[in-house]
Amino acid sequence: MRILPVALLAWSVAAAPASAEQDLLLGANMNTPAMTQAEMSRGDIEALIAQAAGEPIDLTDKALSGLDLSGLNLKGANLRTARLNKTNLRGADLTGANLEQAWFIKADLSGAKLVGAKMFGITARDANLSGADLSWSMPIGDFRGANMSGASLVDLKGGADLKNQSMGLMRAVFVSVNLKGANLKGANLSRSRLEYADLTDADLTDVVLMGSDLSGANLTGATVAGADFKNVEVGGARLQSLKGQDSAKGWSALVNADRAITDKTN
Image (cartoon, rainbow, N blue to C red; front, side, top):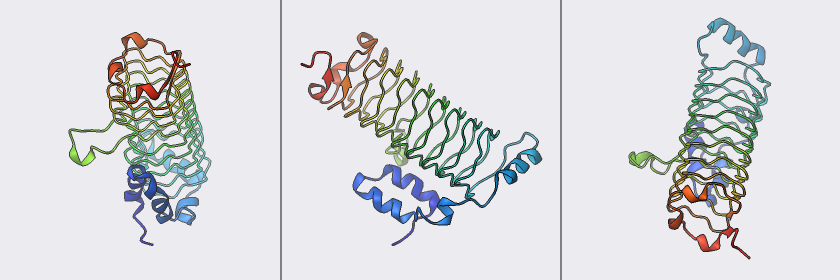
């Protein structure tokens, strides 16, 4: 089987049709040392941080899977195409870090700071981002199955860029993501994939969801004031006990609204 370069594969998996995903993941050889082991220790990285004297460190394309990097100051670090599968980054500071095309499968980023982080092409399936701060970040990648409960995603930029034809299909993939109680105020998730996402009690104030897929998602108790729902697919979605629905935009343009579960559903 032809093996795709890691840098290319990270986005290919996120954008591929469901039928092709398994083949692409197999093509990445997920069980090889490059994807499961580390070429550096925590001590090595701490030494780099000390030597950098406050400047961002460069960990481009490094194999760092399985390490305990919890609590480290990695502000602005370059982790582009790095592999951090099952890595413990609990409480780490990744503010402004470059995480483009990096791998974070089953990584623990709970409570981490990812404010303004670049995440184009990131693969973070089944990662733990509970309580993390992703405000003003650009998570254009694959987060399916991740735990983002209680996370802050204020003003994040996860929507497709239709002005750039080469990037028009690249968007946030939040399929089956746990977003219970998450703060998404002002986020752009236009044309994003949110099938079966759990948005119970989430704050979607002024969120742009235009053209996104919320089929099967649970929005029970969510705040939707000012949110743009134009052309949003809601077949099978739970739209019950919503707050601020009267000021939501595009509600009359929902797709498959008759198949959604609402307060009027018997």
